[in-house]
Length: 115
Image (tube, rainbow, N blue to C red; front, side):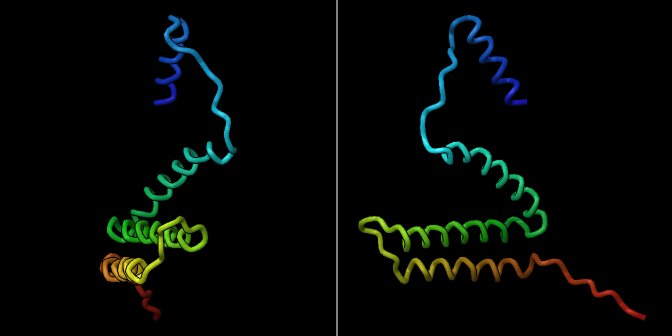
């Protein structure tokens, strides 16, 4: 629906000489993968949050971002950035929050009674 809307307005803009179509900027191929990765992430999020719950999913998502930033700081450090005990402790506390917050959200295991 949104793409159709934009194509209609672009067509009208081109017809009345208010817009022109230009070439995409030059750059590495992976520069254009952000939209696709975003769509996949949103589809994954909307599916998995039903099973984990919002709190657990959010804590896992933030924890994953923290671990990712830690790995970037370790393998590609920038000047003035140091991996400290505070950073590692914060990441561990986030995952502790996942465990504590997620325990109440886990579905109850239903054991089949065998007769």
